[in-house]
Image (tube, rainbow, N blue to C red; front, side, top):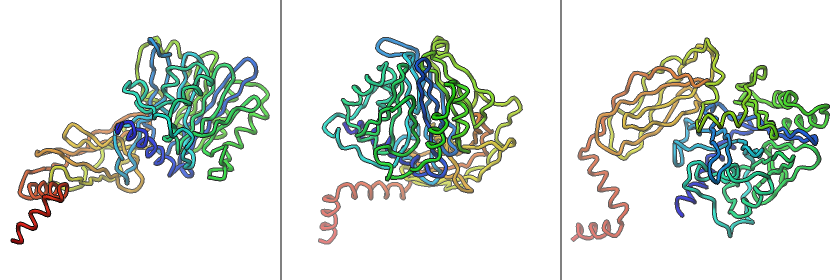
Length: 415
């Protein structure tokens, strides 16, 4: 039970980190329309400088529909340690071979209260990303009606800072805000980052929402090209990828890094026939003349310390010959790494503690928006000795965790 609760609340914390910058550098836009024949969905993924996103294909198997999920490996903000798992992956958006689509959108804090008597969703099956009820629905459901039946079985407390947008090949769509369901009215529906049920909580009015609504109201013909133009009109400088899905044909188009001229087209069934795989989206769009980032300088930080103690390490920003956005990764020399880091200031920072004695080589490298990586930096040698200071630390930690023994020792010393 503890693992379930931790999982759902850590997801909330990570979504909350996204929300903390949504107004200035992070936001998303989604929309769908139905004309009696076609059912299309458009979506912009805007998320600061984090471009560590993947297209994950899951072929159909017993009890699971075939599907593609665009997932996001959360990047560490360089001024804030992870609350739990540096390898946390969130399934952001996807479509299955039954014509069901979903995407998640952050929103102002609002704690769901109507489902408190129900269990929290958790699964040991990695295909469901352990915590993601929306990803589970993509494997199990054909329609938004079936999605509602699934969501009705679970406690939605983890949705206090995100909402889910679903659409299906029948032309039905809705937004699940936690306690409230926002159904489509008319031929289209639009979602950004405010709550339709509580717009007064923030991020409304929203120019992206108003732009998409206006363009859909004045649409002459429903087409993938027109939906791509809506993505273009609502994108921001932080938009990582923009997608258009044809839910009846099982085809989707991906544009990357605000280039709306040459989308890549994917036939879902053809891609699923190639087997299960996960592809870095940026690598699909890498120009032939792209260069890797320059080699970073060696990390800076303590060169000796006590095992089990957190230490902070940093490095200066490097540059990219092509002017691309950059993320950073520390290798701690013990078989672990920092996870990719989003730089916020002039230096890149990360925290680590070594659990055992030894000598470790700490290195750092950079990655550009297309997934091209730099050379590793020169190493910083770090030694974690087991010395008197370490033993004293162990004794202190023991006594702090056993206050009764500590009090007895104090009384004994006073005799």
